[in-house]
Image (tube, rainbow, N blue to C red; front, side, top):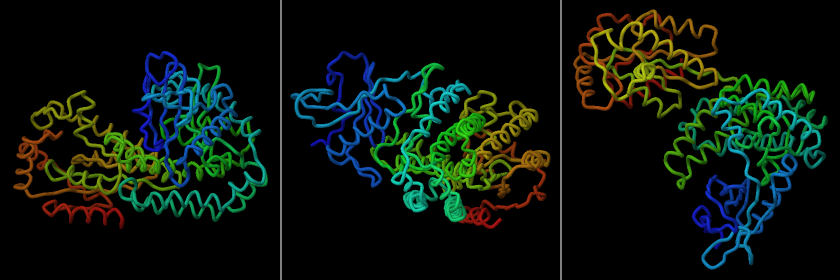
Length: 518
């Protein structure tokens, strides 16, 4: 019976023996979390993902007890114990009497204003917060269990098993969550690193750096009580293979998480602080390898969420976007070079249409001049602001600001391994020179795609736009003015010239071949 209970619906305000004002329910792929005014209760789902098995009541009770035991290492007063859930009549009771039908981990409720994810989101995280984390982690790893049993999890056998498991479990998402070339690049990097650094991995075992650590050390599992205390909670209890390993794997996880949230300065500060206090300077040689591994794991989890039919559609799409970003970050750590793909040409020649077609085949950050311009002016994206050529919001000055902002966005995204698609006319040589100047000392591959079409085709497309919800404001007279002043991009290299009269299927394949061969 237990395995069929949807606890998010079965537990209500009446399920508790004490009065509560509000009950908040959070659901993950492996648990239900019930947050009351003072206490938090976590129920494990009866699932089996291979790497964890909660399919029986006995197993769920065991792992509840294991969760309390392990997490008390860093948070001795936060985890209060394991409590039964019983059924009294038609009501399920938390901490009830009688025969348990389920078990839950009971914890104190942490202050939401101190959650690290919230501090990151609100840009309130500081170096002092990072100091508290380092001060907690250094003695934790020094005292954490090690020895022959734990050392096994630092072996090449286990490391390779972990990484290969990731690759096999995500191959079905290639083309959706990451491109095939990035997938192959990460796989080759990982295998080559493991093979080439055998002595380093063995040395880490011999020197005692394989420990029973946390396993899930990132911002979602960290909370601060002002600047007095840090809680590092929710370690992995269900699988020793994920919890035990090189301490670098844990450190890399949090460093990666800070990078992901665009706090690269604090990521570096965290690593430097840990190195200084732990004196484990050799850790740097493994840092990018484990950052890549951790980013890939987060991408995998995002894929699992995207593939879960019970998750609402909006959450699934958000999970896919996060997965794409994590995989791009893994690619960056592996030493991959991101791509800047520029769709250029006159209005109505198919730039936006083809850019979106490419996005369906190759995940990237899409940056449109039409969107950026209106955001800079705080205008509605679907509102139309028609004006004569180079007048109003399309003045030369506003256009320059738009292109500068587009390049600024592209530079930021590319620096984290993301591919970027720019969609704009780029009709002046000066604007194209800006691209080359911006990225002349940047590790990036630039591809230019010049879209062209016959006048009658363009006129037909632009007339259709009047009745469609497009962001672009360009009409026939604007196209003619652009055409008169357009400077052909013959200096661009590599350059793909596309006659967009062809079918979209043919054009898609031509673009993909161009990106792979250039």
